[in-house]
Structures are given as C-alpha cells and as structure tokens.
Length: 51
Image 1 (tube, rainbow, N blue to C red):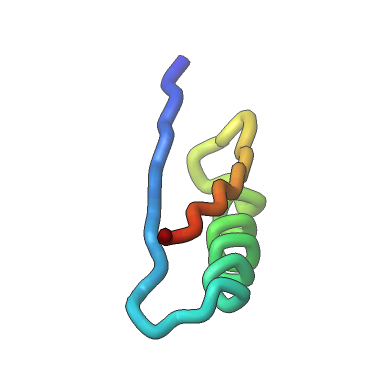
Image 2 (cartoon, rainbow, N blue to C red; image 1 turned 120 degrees about the vertical axis):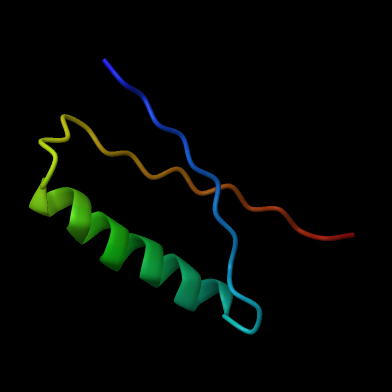
C-alpha cells in the first residue's frame, strides 16, 4: 500500500474561501473520477493564522 501526504499553499492573492473551493471541487473531483483506482481520499484542512 502506498500513502501520499501533500501540503499545499494558496496562491498569492487567492482568498481562503476560493482556495478551499478549489481544493474541494478540483482535487475532490479528480479523486472521485478514480483514474488510478484510489481506495481512499481524505482532505484535512488545517488553519494556520499568522501572528
């Protein structure tokens, strides 16, 4: 079994809401299409607020 963990950041100028929508809609739909026969796909959002 192969596990992959990825950390991604927003593009400069992209709002947080637009970023979450992009991650959910684009990446989620790619996983749902299941081109590589992915058994599971999980999205965990971590909120980091700058000081």
